[in-house]
Image 1 (cartoon, one colour):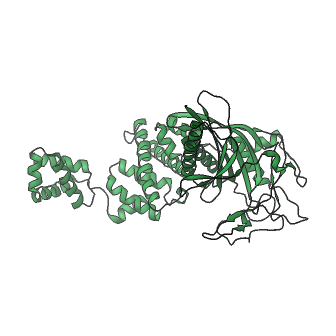
Image 2 (cartoon, helix red, strand yellow; image 1 turned 180 degrees about the horizontal axis):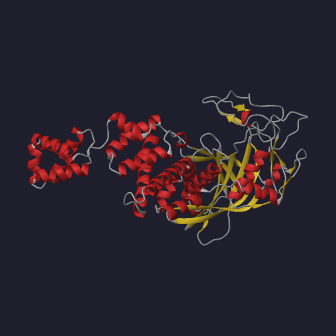
Image 3 (cartoon, one colour; image 1 turned 135 degrees about the vertical axis):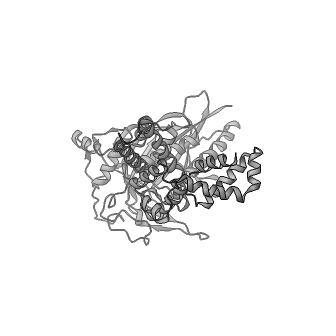
Length: 496
């Protein structure tokens, strides 16, 4: 039997507001002492009243608009009742039938294929506390610092068919939230959490069968692995004629690479929802929605297309550059500086559109190879980069104009990366400017030819590697200050 996989995701995005969802406690609970960032409101003490955080509402509206959702004119809060140690009030303030937005979509690209993933709804709710399970102990602890943190819950349609599509969807959603500047969306810190719903069906069937919910996945790779395991597990059940009949919740054990059953999945009526009596309903006017919409930045998919079409780089290069908003802005700033330089040279030298395209491609290469390598070495967040676009453009201009060669430019870039230095200043201080006097280069070439007779003989015998060796010796002698092409040309002429 050929089976098809049906995957839908439920995502909780922690909003980066100043205070919690319904009280004035700080919304930053990372790296602080447990149970210190709390108050009677977020702890659910009798007689306390919640107050809606407008910034959280605005962030949720903005994300719903970015996901092309239909915004509900009237929206309200509801109580979701269940009893668990991490829920201080014994209920969670959420939204049931009148969420902020519905019927949206997110476009993902898997390989060369673009796919539309439907967004069922986006609603606001408060977070629960954090359970801590000490290793080797038979008890759990509760840290209530996170209780009351504002969340945007985003529920996708079951439109994904592979674990890879689910991972790409998560990656794209994280990027979208970061571009909107409403969440860090860091899975490792719990700022983005994902529950996956997965079921199987015969390939030709259009019905939806009993789904399984997977929890406790804290990385994109973990989501992909958990779904792959569950596909294998459920496929065996289908092939044995015993497909899942009850909706269950399973826990992903990342260290073992398996899911284990926790409980039967609750139904909506189990939560005994009813309208939150202590909070006024929300009403969004057209003017208010228009005002929020004006805050929409250029989104990742739009930026990729523009980079590809306007700057002439490949789409895959645009994807790489836009994987971080800080890098995308840095790249565009560098290109803008280089274009301004080209324009300033009009009438002075032969710089044209072809030159601009070459400079753009050089910028892509230097950022995605050398700069990315330096960022990866010390795990630096691109937004903390010390180099500014003006200095990066100057470095690329110096390479293009043969003031320095690529080898020297790499040394200069490393110093710029560490100290934020100006490239021309580094070149002057380190005496790294490329040697332009051919007679001076010839003197050094004569010395290298005289000292390496065996390599010269090999070159004359037609062995190309000998020339590479001799060029390397020239570069070593000049500390990289000679253009390798020039060195190769003079060497060839001398040995002939």
